Length: 204
Image (cartoon, rainbow, N blue to C red):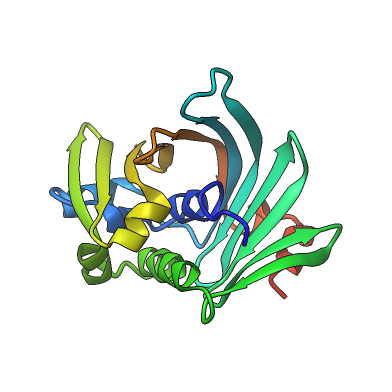
């Protein structure tokens, strides 16, 4: 089974409806964040592994289609495409399915997908059940800290901090073992025109 940490949680955090994660000033953060039906942009990821001096770096493109799923396309250092829907996480290579994790068969996948689609639906009650939330906002800039309540989810995601304004701009994940992942989101575009025909076809 491939690791969920490098991509599944990253995709979850890139969701267009991330205001649902806000804790203390829920209404203010929800008002500050845009909620487009389609959102695409660039991601730059740095992963620092405990005990290894040189960090691992990658970059690529992500797209969020509200109610349909997310594409996470790594371009560097190696091309790789992942698609998350309510039912599965699918790894694609050369336009074909290389690996599929079924949400009904993989408990962690089911949990992650449940959180993802709760975010997209703005289901605060689901998030309150799974995470301890703490948020602040000032002049349109906000920060939210998430701490998983359930051991299985905590093992999969660690502690998470989000920063942003109209959109999520930075995600930091700290795992119990000392690993740290830092993801920045930029060049965000919204609307149907942000999605290429090839990307749209992956959801048909």
